[in-house]
Length: 154
Image (cartoon, rainbow, N blue to C red; front, top):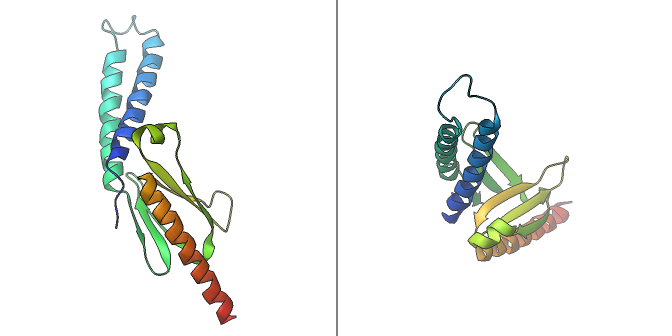
């Protein structure tokens, strides 16, 4: 299994910092003076930052993907471990995506759209733009080859 680019940890930690800041601001706005003599917001910020930081570490450690002969295999998850198999015959199209945070960190995501129900797309985050483009082209070729082999069998 291939792992994600280590820079994705920084992106996820920045997101964790923002979430912790927002949650501590919300808690800080609540009237707590009648119950507690010290400000609660800094403690909430540190607690959420530590919890989210540990979560992001485990999230990175548990993310992996692999391209085999028949499909793309993806594993991820901290609380709920998810194993996905995307057969090449189900791939409709593949995009590489770079949002503002990903561009700032020099990363990209690969989005694999599959045939099937709504929301049947799979995203592989934390790739370098070059690796995302390589994977996109490799998967495109494998999907075309697989489609041709199915047509030959019919």
